Length: 127
Image: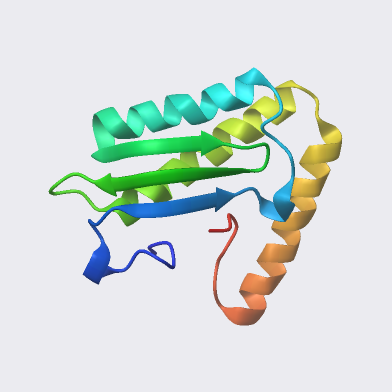
């Protein structure tokens, strides 16, 4: 399912995107977490058709000015980016033994799962 602001009519136009961490948790506080984002963006540029004009990584969100190259869909690129970076960040949080943040994230996932069951919609990472 495409992120809510990218629809088929404007799929391959330039977009200003904000990708937030659930509950606005300050996760990007160490270089390792920044590197996960940078590596994921590099991968998407090289292999997924992402054309990235600019980006900024804040402690709890990311701003991107981006579009998809011809033949690619920005919604799919962003979806893949979010899935991959979520997995990698969770691994790093486990490795760093950041239990407090992991508990916040897990509790938020539980709340989102309950919301999804009630509403029939899935939304883990906010846009």
